[in-house]
Amino acid sequence: MNVLILGGYTPAHRRLLQTENVKLYLFHYTKAIKSYYSEIYEMIFTFKDLNRLQWVRYGEQLNTDVKIDAIITFDDDLHKVALDLSSLLNIPYLYNENIVELMVDKHKMRTYLKKSGFSNISSIVLNSKEDLINSFLTLSTDDIIVKPIDGAGSKYIYKLNKFENIELFYNHLVALMDKLTFIIEPYLKGIEYSVEAYSEDGVHKVYCITKKYKDSHFVEMGHTIPAQLDNNTIDNITDFITKFLNIIKFENGPSHTEIIVSENKINLVESQARVGGDMINELYEASTGQDILTSIVKGMIGFKVINDIKSLKELKDYKYSTILYRPSINGTVTKIEVDESIRNTKGILGHRLWIKEGDKLSINHSSSGRIAQVWAVSSNSDESYKLAEKGLQYIRIETTHEI
Image (tube, rainbow, N blue to C red; front, side, top):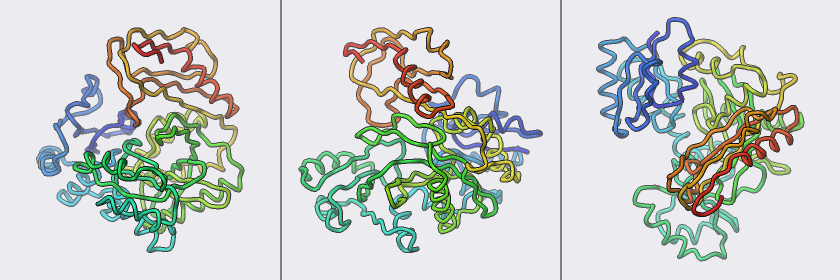
């Protein structure tokens, strides 16, 4: 079977390569190519940017030389390329056009869910300062969230109170609005979780609920898998996700959905047609011993796998895995020291640095601003968090401004 992969997520690609008689062909951005890719892919096509016509043209060319049997992607911004290729080459794709539109356009999703009666939450496309001023009354809220209509990575997400200086805030956004379309939503109070599900022929299985930790800029600072929840809450979240997926007519493939849970209500934040990122699948395996990623990637190329995936309540004797991140600050990195204790402490599974000495850092309020991460596992949820926290303390980074 010849599989065309659009974009990244090498761990999943490697799992797919273990499937018998599968050959992989990669379309990816030039700046993202790694030296070891030649060990994984039969052919690699690189692109400077996302020009859909160019990607499709090369896909058509590849298909004349090598008959492509399946197309997959784990990148939100490449679903439309996959759909174009699917239509042109008559190759089935997991997600239809309606699902892709709803998943990549947060305003369309809000509108669809409200019209269907699933949710009463509205959103407003931001076109003017008056939209901001009027949004508090229109949305019946004292606090709003302003975010890109198709954004990811917690970038350019703002919370605004009705008593703040709206004109000053709008003037800050104007420079960004040339490139980004923003929407306004009511601020939802509660605890944030993400939910992993896999669907096959319209049957949905929720296999993981993740507790998320975010800072005041809504940037994720870490998460714990699985979230420590009582059976009633697990049932309520599972029912909510199942109903949501049915309402949007989600039939096949993985989904990653973010929700806010308050005392008496569950609200949807957003959803993506892919697996969760930020090592969710790797941490799930560390917690449960279940190789979820192999099952999912096989399902994405046509195998029937849903019976191989256990729902959260079917799991027994699982542990808790936590990953925590260190955010960037302003300054030049002068010294990096990693204490050997990080490798010798039981429960700390690993760490990663994205910086080196001499790098110039700046504050970056998004997931791309992380400079280090540590992940750990324990039979106790709080202990897994403390282990990851301790691991970050073992990483000493000196800059012109001390971290």
